[in-house]
Amino acid sequence: MHAPPNPIRYSWFRSFNVVRWSLVLTISRLSRWSINYYNDTARQAAQDGLDRRRANGGLGEYYSEGDTRAPSWLIAGEAAHTVELVGLDGRALDGGTADPEVVQRWLDDGIAPDGHAGRAFAKSSVHGFDLTFAAPKSVSLLRALTTGVNDKAVSEAHRRAVTAAMAYLHQHAGYTRVHNPVTGTKDLQRLPGLVAIAYQHETSRCGDPHLHTHVIVPNRQARADGALVSLDSKSLYHEAKAAGVVYQAVLRHELHAERGVEWHPVDPHTGMAEIAGIATECVTAWSRRSSRLREWARNNLVLVDGAPSAQQLAAAQKATRPAKPESTSWAALRAQWRADARGLRLDRGAHLEVRAARRTAPLD
Image (cartoon, rainbow, N blue to C red):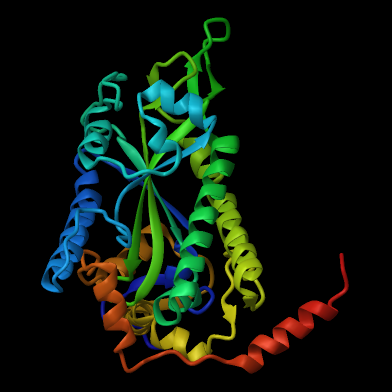
């Protein structure tokens, strides 16, 4: 392959599977004011839904039933105790709607809902973490382009899978570090729970169906004595891939149990699998973001063996990144997608073939 002018050296791996790998579970550090994007998107989507209801002669309020971008509390670990430690009420235990202003104070200033504050943030401090859990493309298509029953089933399966993954993270990475006066080192101390805010998003950068949830974890969490302390980020990153695998496994289990969904083989590198029964060409047609990445790679990258660096992946993502149309209401998005000529083709033969293979496979 001839090198393009001034190429960025890139390592080829698995058909330029950048997006799919990175969306099993990504963790991004948040700085001051980063939370504005999530809150603004939620408000804009709610306003869009409110405007649509009014235009159709109905009345509504922000974050009413059916809104998908409403921020909600997500508690992992000792839920009741943790909620009490930070001053939330019982509605948070049930995943109630989070007040964006309360969330902003917590992320920007380290002030918990009850008004208590931890150590002040420095200019370069990490204010929180964005843990992004993403469904496979075929799952997003099942929800967006088929029946309302599937919409509800996928939404609930996705919610349970995210909850299970966060429970795993609390168990295996829910630590802070405390000074040990005897050894002079910092020891890990388990937190009673993790309080997070879940922002469900619906679209890819190209506006295609892409169900994913940003779980925002403030970097001031309550210790057992009530003090607000920072998370041990090393543990969090160490367990990220395992938590992503937990999310994918629970999602598959829930959809198989509730809707009889069958699955193609799980990718051993990502832990993801696509639905057997949604035609592969449909998955490709509705994956314009991946297509743009592959096209850009062919024209701009020298392909060699090995794995890509973070800088190389970031260059590819940035070069192909359009504005994200996430502030449109769920009702409007679904109407646009269902009118799209790409449509959805179901492959019943593939579904039956995978089901037969599963039923006849030997038990381990």
